[in-house]
Length: 392
Image (cartoon, rainbow, N blue to C red; front, side, top):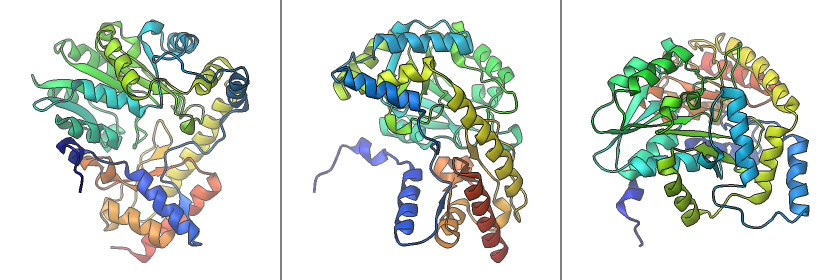
């Protein structure tokens, strides 16, 4: 039997895909399944974006592109960062990526090694911890607490930095909680980081255009003092319903940019050419479809939280961003993963147990409201019937 090097024994997984596979298997067996597990918009990519890719292919744009991305697309991204966040980012610091995870992979690989600490949000996207452990670095969780609306506390985060810290990962709006960290906490974090000039920060802002209740996303790209150590992660997948296009972008300090370019050359060469032309059309074209999607998400958000708060022994704070609800299930008598599993097997509702997002996820489950309002309300009704039948 062949064995990989030891690092691979530490490599984790993203359980949302395992839940998706099980849900699909049950559906194939004839069971009625409502999937609130997977985190992707249930909308079609807007037509003008699709047409841009088709036109690019017909025009012969189906060869290699620069490893860092098409120059025009990098210019468009720089303009978009300026328009939305007032950030003055040179296109020469922007890298077009095949999705968001590659930025995580590269950033953590650049800084992670045995003896090094990397701070990450918990509950948070599971790939953060998986990649940290893969490199041999120590994963240091930064708790996201319900009483703070699942925003991070700058004071708590700063208190966890030591001489061994090399990278901090933050994510707002947040997966899995939908929490949005307010500007005051961001300001406090940036000010505190002045005491730690050798620490890099990766800001995962993939849900940056998905905020509610009049909140505006506060991007770390708008702080010039972070220019020489900020890695910004963003992309098209959530805002424009383009998850399968595998198109993202990142901003890198000048000192790291060529290292990242070489990693791209050594791994995937370049991003799909037609997808990059679609990315140009997404940013420069009409935003009506993206705006309409957010209106619908807002309707679902309010409905699912109201319905969850009617369930026995369940409570749910109102998420301020993304498209996830993260209800508290500590009073149901179930551990979170057991509850999630039984809801799928017995009630036909796919959710994700909080511990799949970290140690601080116990007591919670994640619901994605990227499904029709009818299905969401039907799913919560099924959850209610299950919980009534299995009261502690």
